[in-house]
Image (cartoon, rainbow, N blue to C red; front, side, top):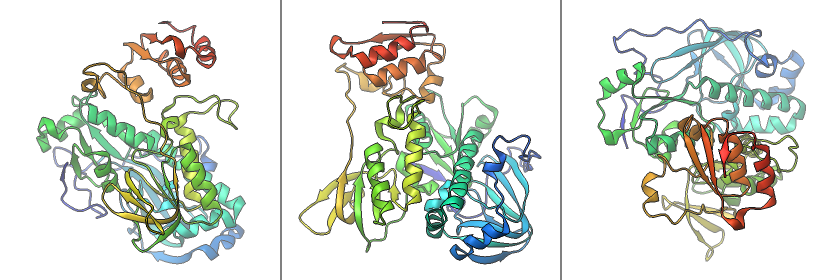
Length: 454
């Protein structure tokens, strides 16, 4: 991977704000309002004076002058800001210089940030002081304590932080991916960002913005895909780890800290272990080389998971578990691969792919299943551009109005049939005799109205 950066990540300069002709793009007058934003009062709740008094013990009062930034998109923030006086403005932007005014005036009783603040992740928007501000600043570790110590208020704040991240994902303003739609690496990066709930958008090479960027960067074919980070830095053909590191998604580890529990794998079992251990006050580290949710996280719909009688998508299930683990203070490192476990020392040591070792008194291995590949000669050449091992919204876009062959007869295959039938022109299903279980047939019957053959 190569990067084209005029400044390191976290510096407050967006060096790609200018358009191709050198003219800055001004912020659009598109402020969110109660009438235009569903669930407005849940996304932007206002704390009463009594509620501010209750949470004041978790933070410290700070003052900021007009025109200062509390934090910027892609930069670090000291914590969640609860406004005591003054006003701030929220503006979303991406590395291409596109801006969108979200809130023109946030006032007393409102608070900043989204769910990433639970683990101290970089901000997703610019928060600019309009009138001198006095604010209660609550650091991430204190914010997690607030969630537990003030359960009722914590529930309202947690809901707002989660909904803000959802809104940011829907806006798509964050990282910008550029490349041909069937590029294997582009598809992999889309999956990584989507499954890790990081806002992004993808530009086809033929679009106006993409053409302007390509003319400026003059990339070679092996530089694709390009990723434009929120601070304007352009990464050329990064892998998941390089992109995550630059976006600030990988946490720092204290080399002298000994965790009570280290968990290898962030699927449903690993995240459940993280929630239970962290909620008991244990120090917890979780490692996964891809994304939270494991195989379940790729499912379009899960109908048989306890507690969800109407079903839930794998992405939503993984997101809820991930946020719950963060709320209790679990230290989640994604994408970080574990390559070894050293049991001849105590505390035990988990060795990462980087050769760094993390010490823990207990290690839970919840590494999950390995995908089976059909024994077809040359199949690997088409993986990522024609052959896929899950059916998400990304694959649905790639096969829209195309003919699809789906191999398999388990529950995941049944869910994929139902999902893809509304996108593809035709779905053919290839099932071996021993896979025709009753659970598959039950799901298959729900999709029989769609055009497909078996």
